[in-house]
Image 1 (spheres, helix red, strand yellow):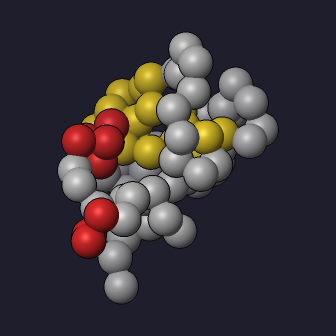
Image 2 (cartoon, one colour):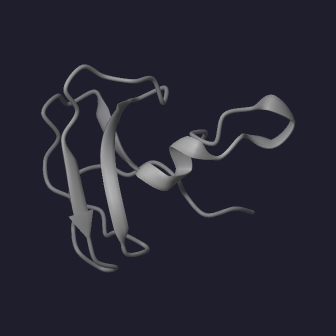
Length: 72
């Protein structure tokens, strides 16, 4: 089973990297927050309760058989 790709405020970052806000379904949001995190740091609150944090590098990876990488 793969590593989780969406994170809520208060959860710990699994890896170092730049994380960006996205909609619950992985959709883009207008003027998203973008933060640089170290592994183990807790994610801050989102600008909107319906948003999640995703690793920015995952946005450029194609999903398996055309599916999105933003599934839980």
